[in-house]
Image (cartoon, rainbow, N blue to C red):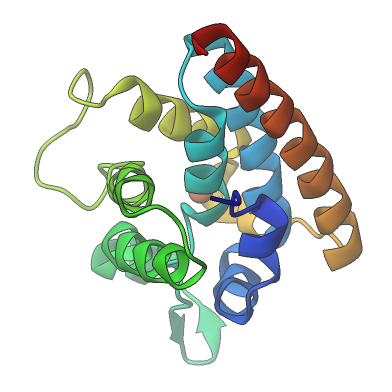
Amino acid sequence: MKRVTLVDVFKHRVTQKYLQRSGINHAVTVTGYAFEMALEEGVDPDLATKSALLHDMGHYEWYRDGKWDYEEYRKHDIHAIKGAERAHKLLVRLGEDRLAAKEVSLAVLLHTDSYLPFGLDDKRTTLQDVVTRADEKDEQPLGMHHYKKMDKSEAVQLLHALDQRIEQVLEQKEKLSG
Ligand SMILES: [Fe+2]
C-alpha cells in the first residue's frame, strides 16, 4: 500500500481550511520537532509527524465584540476532541490504514489535557508523549504561536523533506525486520 504522505495530508482542502486557524507555521514546526523526538524515542515517525501536523486542526476562533478573546476561548475549548475526529475522517478519506488513523486520532485527542478535569501526565503512550512535547516546545504565551507566518510553498517544501526522511527510516526498518 502506498504511504499517505505529509504533503498529501497538508494539501487536502480540509487541512487547508482548518490549519489556517491554528497556523501553518505552528503545525509544520511541531511536525519537525515530532520527527526528531520520534527517532530519539523509537516510535513510528510516520504516526508522530501526522499527529503533529494535525494536532490543532480542531481549533476555532473565539471572537467577542469583534476581538479575539483568549480567555473565553480557553473556557469553551474542545479543540482536541474536534481535531481527533477531523484527523481520523481526513486520514481515512485519504486511504490511510485504519489502525494508523486511530493512533493519530488518539494522539490528537490526548496532546493536551487543558480541557479535561484531570491530568494526563504519565498516562500517555510514548507516541502521544512525543506529540505533546513537540507541541509544548513551540508554544508561546497567550497562544501567539498560532500567529507565526509561513507560506504554503515553504510548508510543502519542509514537509516533502520530512516525507523523504520518514521513508528512509521506514525502509531501513523494513530491511532490518525482513
Ligand atoms: Fe499546538
